[in-house]
Length: 296
Length: 324
Image 1 (cartoon, rainbow over the protein chains, first blue to last red):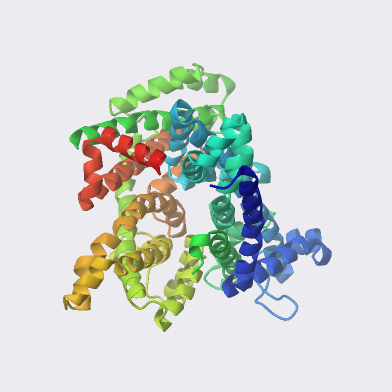
Image 2 (image 1 turned 135 degrees about the horizontal axis):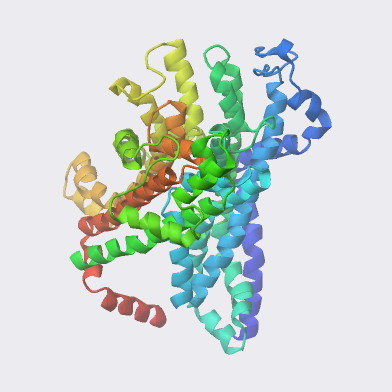
């Protein structure tokens, strides 16, 4: 019933309000704040690792004389089967795990959003073509798909990241497609189209901003999956290659010494658990904060 | 209904063709020579060339693919490059272990998750609910293979209660099944809790209580059936996760299953074995998805009606959308 100018003002206010409101709700959510603090500490430690850990000396240099030492004052988490400091390797491994986890989900979100938006907006044959092709990827368990992809490529960090992102694309595309399907029939889209906006303009500036909030929370919530996948791949020897540390490959090499030296396998796993918990808390908080219906 | 089932079964065929072609093409273009893998490092160039000719590796990829699929359709999955055994025989030996792991963990998920979710919903915001929220958060954050290693340290190394590898006895199956189903416990118990909370707030539950029915009976007979709908969806997804997850868990516990066979085959570029594992897992997933959709229809009469006249239903919703 409002004039176009009025609608514009209301829409503008509402948009700014949503993000400010979401931030306010996020900062009031105790568990989300705990998660953000944990995640902040983990990210900061991993990013600043080169400042206090020497890669050549502490992370990869073999020191047989000091092998399989239990945690002590000098070596916070002990040493592994080649005498390398477990703590230094966990921090450095976190750089790889987090990089692969975050980047792969980021790539998948970008591609998935594009495909899902196009499929949902154009519908018909375009939709069938895109969604049926993605069904092919969903027809194999994602773990098997990634193992196949990884094993036929050189296991570089970039290739691993790309392979893992493939597994996330169908889910992201479905998510955004469902959103676009809901939004594209709304009256304001008809109004924009009547004003002569092109399809691309409608998708990019009028549909996506309204469809994006579930993508943001699902982005955060998928990162644990990315981290678990890279560690699983490294665990079966198809991921990050020695001597580079990665949480999964550390677990795998510690397996042989599980009988006497539990610390080599226990600590990298704890690093995964803490990181995943932090991401889950932030992701849950973000989902609740961005969804007005979840206010209670 | 049977027409719908038939149509869905037909839909599996293009997906299978897509999956097999995708994997076949990826394998053909990847580095590594199957002839080398068969004959070993010491093979002479002429022997390698002969082997390649024998395997048909010099033909175009599409010809190789069609030849392979022609074999599959007639029940011939080929011979493994690395073990020289018929692939079908290798699968026959390993399939039981993988099925025990996949379906055993699936069963375990629902035995644990449904009652737990119901109790959490009834005792919403109680001390138990809050403790379980933290416990499930921690359990969900554990990679299955790490949990497996920790369980081995505790129950096999320190306490000596359970064997750490194989799947020969029921005792040996406990740890692998727990590791595979933990992720399912956490997500599904949360799902049951949420959907149960939705249902018990509805009017017909209040009516049942007003009639004076015992609360336990209301929960079991009236609420649970409706609350289980979302769980059916997650059954379909859990099957995929269990099949995929068993690859890693088979490695942790040294179980001779399909997943381990596939990883070994991938390392040796043993194309017939890889293809067969991919086809089997894709068929399992496709059938699971079909069963999931069908079970909706059996549980909920409202959904059953949509299968009868899909076109009329689609028109009705489209019309409703415009007028709204």
